[in-house]
Length: 348
Ligand code: ADP
Ligand code: MG
Image (cartoon, rainbow, N blue to C red; front, top):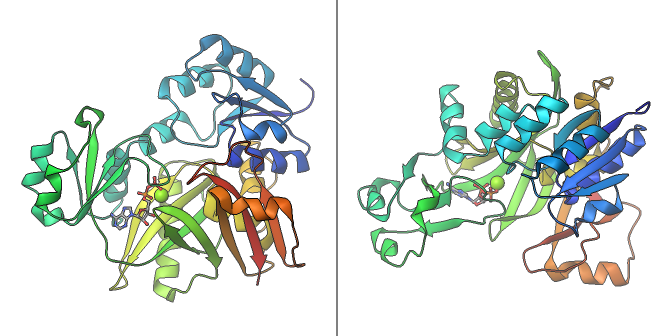
């Protein structure tokens, strides 16, 4: 293997954009995904279809690459661990295991004296009846959730009766934060106290799915500094290598809370492709492949709009864009409701 080959687990839009960034750096990519239709096949150099617990496929994948990274957090720990014995996995598997579990993740953040919303582990319906002070709240599966999947708003005790939830899965009840706004901070850590950090991004969700991201975020200086400090503190504590995103809530009294950590590149960072000299994707590849760190420079303010479900259609048919607009089609074959199909970044 004379040239570098980066293995990526997961073949969605994040895997695609990582592949594009790697190509720019002359690094080949091999994607391993359990979806035979994975759209990243359009962007990577090599593709392996297999279930994530298929030991033979894991072996085949590891043989082809120099190191392994991932585009999503819901990968069985055993899979990452097995791969890590064959080729280095970055960010390391223990980081993924911690963050893929909402309770472990929040316990970890609170131990750093960083604020999260109040939460409690739920094993059965009757647990909630004694927790009125956590209502209104949101019941979430402790693992495997994304884009609001596996979440149930609970306004009051009466709502519990109509809950149709399989409690054998493991749940967390979180107190609802009275949101003023949501922001995210993306940081790429290269080593001890060695970072590049992007300015906070302001995010708007529709039906718990990210719809708009914009820089600059309209926030005060204190929140700007605190969010960047907390994100770097989290990355440092995890001894993280690569790009990480911290999602924050800001309540109506200007209090900052960590919502969740994504141990990977993040949808809110899509605008970094056009707004910065180095995107979150390129920085991730640089960090995990031990390439040179380039000082980050913002070139433009920007706004990103996610194209969800049918919203992609007019753009696919008739792309008329201004010079400051950039359209990305993830080339997903099937249009599904609530599915992120593409995005548009506008430089402002
Ligand atoms: P996912 O893993 O699906 O991204 P999140 O926990 O980030 O799950 O929830 C998705 C969105 O739902 C958040 O960005 C926010 O808009 C809303 N939300 C989730 N939890 C809370 C909460 N405790 N208080 C207020 N809003 C919340
Ligand atoms: Mg989220």
